[in-house]
Image 1 (cartoon, rainbow, N blue to C red):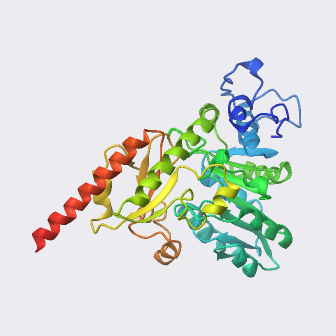
Image 2: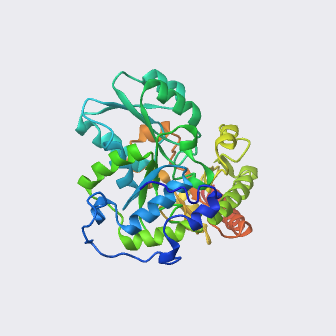
Length: 393
């Protein structure tokens, strides 16, 4: 799992393509479907459930490289990566700090499962509140930046400095940013998790996850993971490695498209609220510019229209109402009904997840076509609202 230094001199875009395996075996690594390997080296022990087969290790090296980390381990889903990472670092009696406004699946898992393990937790909105709520038995802080779905930005360097001073570990979900836009380890964050289903996979055709960090911490995660299972199969490792080769190209395009769409929505009178870190109006804009190379392909917005938000989704022709994110196709969803459905209403609203908030994952289509689709859907909803008002009067 250690990152070789052969390609450390390369730009990240080149590492996406070149890093991972010995090209003498083929520019495209073979898919090793074997579940049994000749037992020669006791230290190696290649075995699928040990996260140590050639396909697993090749992709892990690539992801570690583009995150500027020493090591990585792959899982068969983002939640498998998140849950194993957290549970490998805590024990009964510990206390952890959670950023307010986390992805709904993470929020639901942590809130429902930590208490079963005898682990206490508190939510905090920023570094100052993390500091106030830190206890003698606090062992780690779990954060996102940008957050899912509201795209709040957290000061990663300040967060890492606080954590080091308090003697606690930090875990960040870097899914929304991707390694192309942000490398939290450069700011002192200890561990990075990804739902690789999203930008790393990027084609809406595989489910996977990853944990990235120092060799020492990844060994702790792997030790726990071998008990739980959840390793990524060789076919999906192959798909993931293929996808990462185009990660820089895809994300760069999505950054540009999202900026164009966000600027359009901000200027439209029918838009009540728009959240995108690339906009000057975003409260975390300057911080995002300081710690991100690009502001990502995700945005969240609400319309002023009184039409039900579902009506707007039905009017879209190019953008597809669907769950997940990060693929080459643009998709839109209502977090209150999907990703945050199982988060209690009070917590949802406190995090800014209102019933009418929409999360838009921008793809690689023509930005002109995306804007045209949003325009016609907004106008269609406005016309529908006008017709209903006239009918009622």
